[in-house]
Amino acid sequence: MSKDLNLKSLNLTKVFAGLTKKYGKHLAFAAVLAVLLVYILVVFKISRLASAEPGGDQSTSTVITIPKVDQKTIEHIQTLESNNTQLHALFGQARDNPFQ
Image 1 (spheres, rainbow, N blue to C red):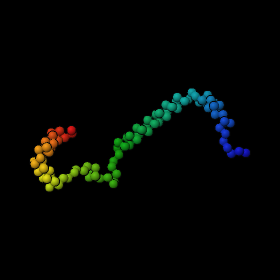
Image 2: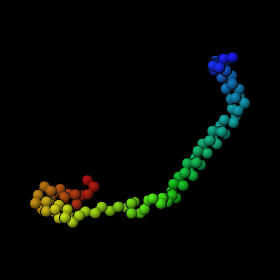
Image 3: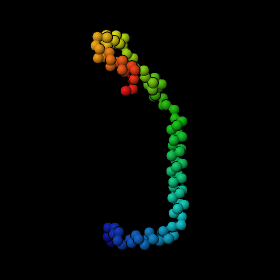
Image 4: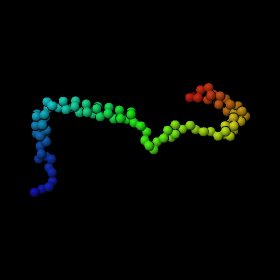
């Protein structure tokens, strides 16, 4: 007896035709049911993620971080700005429209 599988001997077209003849009228119902199940799973996942709380390893200090600039650095930038007219214009433009 041969252990090789011969796909031509299975005659899949007859098997598929028999299945569609037997269950063809239920195919639309099964497709609608599958779409509804996927929709329910997506809505459930969205609602679970919307109500999720941060884990124990996350703290509020790591979520909101405010950068701190050294006072010496601020003074150095201000002296450079006052000495250079191009930098003064550049900083003035950045203050007027910071998102440009």
